[in-house]
Image 1: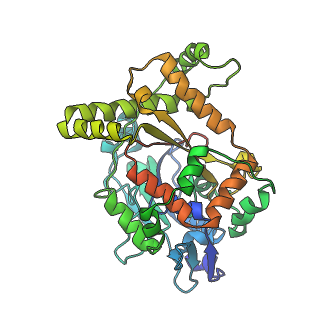
Image 2: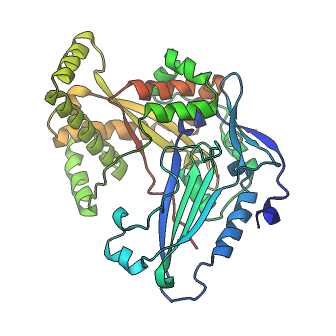
Image 3: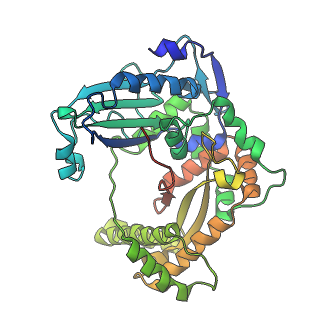
Length: 405
């Protein structure tokens, strides 16, 4: 079936932008649940799912590539027509019904075993290859529904692009040039904090830039631990956000727009900072280290990192590929550690809003030009994130769209 659609793919080497490197060791995994509401006997047939997958991949040849690098640390997606990096495609059945999953509110513990075939951190398969795409089709009992696990490697594409791929709204690989064609001639300075990180020399960044990309991925996974990740889910009601927005208006300049994202950035930044502060207090070593850092003037700020989708700034809403830039601002640790008040939250909200409002096509141009000057600049972002334990990083997936069938 794959040869029907993939036979015409030619070998090619696609140069990646330097700022894509920051995501080269992560995946974008999603799990979707579909109910056979009308008891259709041929509900989402496996053959059709496979056929449509390969047809879509024919328009996304870079998702059939391997990651390679040159001696300068610049990354490439290399498509070998004689040895395509085909997706890890698995199909299985389960004795669990859709109704049982729904009754458990789709809790992870209720999922069929082996539903997830790729973790957040990218790992090599049994043959030593990093797959760009993982698909697992799990057919539920009694033809009651289907679980679709879909993962795309973050180096080749971002969350918006992954949804475009999954929805088969794909363009072809030539669209990867759209960003450069859409940039204005005049550049404008973006976040001073981000620029400072780019210009700051780093031995770690220099070392990372000279590690082959596949080794860099393995090193990143090792540095982050055993390859597992943990997180928390917070549910914030719409009425709560609306009430908080109204309460914050008293403490921000008149006319300031307060978005949901701004408030979430403020709330989570405070939560992270205060939890880290409490952890230091409970450890004599942590307390001593914090005191020494204070005396020496180290880590007096909490850097906040925002991943910004630039499609609307460049007018390329249909673009598939990486269109994220990173912009930073900083919160003084004294503010973050202090008890949460409306006034304290408002200060972070204003910083977040000013950072986002400052972004336009000229800022994107500036970001691209700086990162293209030297691949090491993006590694400086990675090194900064690695070395700075107080960093708070944010990415919004709420506008990425829905997968349709």
